[in-house]
Image (cartoon, rainbow, N blue to C red; front, side, top):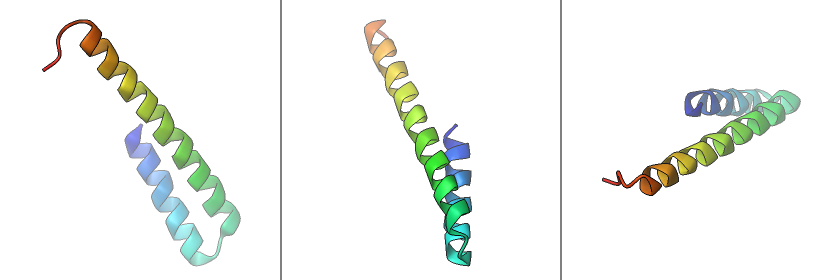
Length: 56
């Protein structure tokens, strides 16, 4: 998921440099949503691992 967020971020940057504002805005929004979903899933995994007592 983080991979796709980075791909959409790169697409947004390239589109922004080339002057395609609508595509850049949409790609940046998708990248932002994917990053926050990744972040939430990561934090849930960390909390569950700590709750089970397997913390490193």
